[in-house]
Amino acid sequence: MADPRTYHVITYGCQMNVHDSERISGLLEEAGLARAEGRSEALGAGADVVVFNTCAVRENADNRLYGNLGHMARIKAEHPGLQIAVGGCMAQKDRDVILRKAPWVDVVFGTHNVGSLPTLLERARVEREAQIEIKEALETFPSNLPSRRESPYSAWVSISVGCNNTCTFCIVPALRGREADRRPGDILAEIEMLVDQGVQEITLLGQNVNAYGVEFGDRQAFAKLLRACGTIDGLERVRFTSPHPKDFTDDVIDAMADTPNVMPQLHMPLQSGSDRILKAMRRSYRSERFLGILDRVRLAMPEAAITTDIIVGFPGETEEDFLATMDVVRRARFSAAFTFQYSIRPGTPAATMPDQVPKAVTQERYERLVDLVNEVAWEENRRFAGQDVEVMFATGEGRKDAETNRMSGRARDNRLVHVAVPEDPALRPRPGDIATVRVTHAAPHHLNSDELPRNLRRTRGGDAWEAATLGPRPVGVGLGLPTVGRPDPLPAATGCG
Image (cartoon, rainbow, N blue to C red; front, side, top):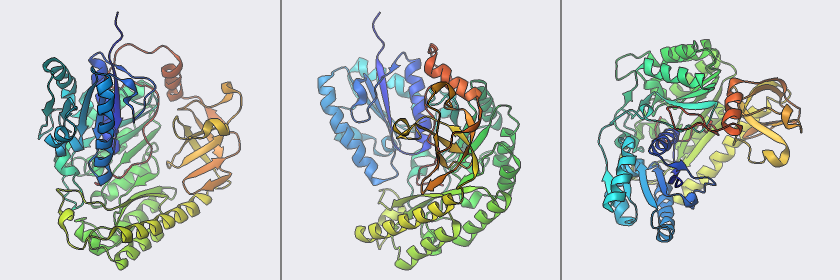
């Protein structure tokens, strides 16, 4: 019997793209393909099908994609049966441009028709002709598609897609469409199914996650959903990303504080601390409202860690505007910030605004901002020295774990913690297991524990990881099938939120 054709999915961008890539993998496995082992983003690992799931938020995404597609042309010349597909936001945006620049691509599909990929690949193979299919409206909610999830103990759960905001720097609404919400019962049914499979941490996903309910007219739907998650037996940790300050209401803060498995962690995109720039960005809040939300969150949850997104060099930004952002960073005491230099995205209002900030000025401001963010984050992390934190261990969190005899994981507030572990593998935590650790010292981006973990709890998530990693692999792919890995724990800037 011939070996099945293999696939490799390369993902750029936000958590929504990671979630979509899990669905793409599930679709391909349902169609009879097998995941290529020894994967390499640059090479496609010799797979028979290579799928690029793209992002269009930042300029370097274009350069990165077309650079990799150029490399794939050489690989395809040596592997005539290779098929290349490009999907995601850039495919939705560029459409015919992709085939003009890279005519060796076999399939181009958009954000609204992920489920069409296997059919398009087969049609391209039979007809020996490139296939382009871009839909303007969502065909089926991505969560209804089969999935090959990247973690046995931690999972993404999409509650909405699309966005109704009109931020002048963001192209995402044009590519993902207006907000479409899943019904609460469908979301909770998926979570319960995942928990039955060993998942113990879920992250609720949406382009504007706390606007959830707008489609069916319930402004308190998101707070109700958080509280409902608290009733699911075996669900230990609930997170969500990314909210928008304009939709962040006190009922959500109350739900976070009252629901034990909703983690004391919040990613709240600031984008700028200047009210003048926020107005130009078409962000419907101002700096004092933003800081007021943070104050109310910390009043309800003093232990909450708050992270953010910030754009430097937006058109028209003056030194005074930039200093206003620096002032908000000092006052907000973020535990981390994703900082970005503004780049022009064709098709957005900001692309044609006057007073584009020179690159050298943006770079200099960016470096000052990063220094301040790191300084504040380090001050915040040093407060944990000598304290105990609960850590859920994970795979892929610590790049130096093997050489330092450590395991890494996330505290309840999502801080990264590197932990010394026993030499005996039988005594070590498994990914998914939970323990108490004593923080011995801190760095700007993580905490360290040189003491062995205490109160180690072997969890169902750890059992699921062990079964997926060490036991026989199940045949076939079903919705939510666990495998190895875990979602990226911190939100990356998506240009929305």
